[in-house]
Image: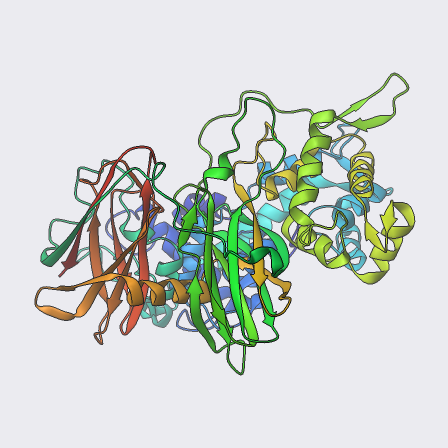
Length: 629
């Protein structure tokens, strides 16, 4: 739990604060106007103008704190990726819509967990343990800053009720001060805040800001998505369609089709390497996965495959991830990592396995796994019974339950990327980054090897079990930290793997032994999006919008899925309305029959992926793409 003493703008008291200083308008403010006024207040506490850009992680964190958020490092990394150079005010507003403000009740609940005497205070020793060893860890200096606050500390105890009251009061006062500044400063009020212009209510209500094209592509076009009745129009009646283009593709049942993927005849004589990985579904629906570098020493025939990893499973319980589609895009590194050339992707299929066979020259290649997202989606069904993770015997000693040990064994299989039955520091750190956002350094790893079972300086399966048992003991049997790990790895409360898909990659070469190294675990975007667009443009069917030769819809189909890409060659952005209502037995990655996308000038973007809902039946893809005026 990260606690920011500098947070200045809790939105829980927005309405009361605004009512004390009503703006000079004839009508009361709408919820939307209140939201944007408070966004501006928070932004202008950090920047001189809302036309200034956020140019660093620290600025983003500070701005979010001033907006009453309490962002963890994982939250910051979600919005500030290695590819991010800047964020504008519109981007900031979109982030605030997704990240809910910290409330007094949430703060109290967090602290109350350590209040063993239920007297409104926590021992300083317990506070150190909570803030420096769990969740988003703080330094001792940061904790000391809290403990040294005289008004809320006495006799070695931290009065968290007073702290929460001080925290919220400070937020409200800072927000009030900033809003007063906005009211009296005519220049600030007349500024154009992002694309949200403050104007007269008598003339026209303030429009909702339009997100930047970069943010729109990463948020599934939420500004245009229909979350209600799919039979009604998504867009206002003032918008008209300039032109449309449609695709109709009838696909047979795939379960009975002959395999197109076949192993080379002499593959038993080829050299082989294997690596495992996993697709993880984030809270916002984004998918991240491991990514790899492969070295081929000399020109060789190569056979690559990827398929879901078949883990142990309870009898009678199907494994939902085994139906998730997987693919692998192979890009050659030319001179630098930034200059990657798409070579091929695994488009041939044999049941759940996808593969490619061909010749590759010597060099460095990037392997980027992909899944369409049609079948790896947020779980909707409620969990009626929570699995038990730990128990105590008659002596009071703590143990892991059989069911939890089985789950940990499966997790071990997933994070043992090279499949040697041991965890190296590198493999363990991919697990740590996923579950805690931090890495284990060499010193900590040395302590781990001293205290837990290892072999060849790597952690054994038993050692991994004992490590989790130690964490349970550190929490005195409280399983909440264990559940954080399980949820991060894609498990629900019933210990079912529903929001992740582990996979295995096999690479064969006839002239040399390939070398593969896991290098990243990040969002399936950027280079992957570019690779998908390139492959669809090269292999798909293209249709030009009638009367608009610079707007082209490309559609690629294989036995298992259909992908559409929109290419905008014009100098202006375009908005395309997509209607899938007449498709039969289909599911797409967006989860909507009707939606709209914005395509930036001189760019291409993946519009949607579509798969059969039931592979054993015929499916019909019927989609209409309309240009909106």
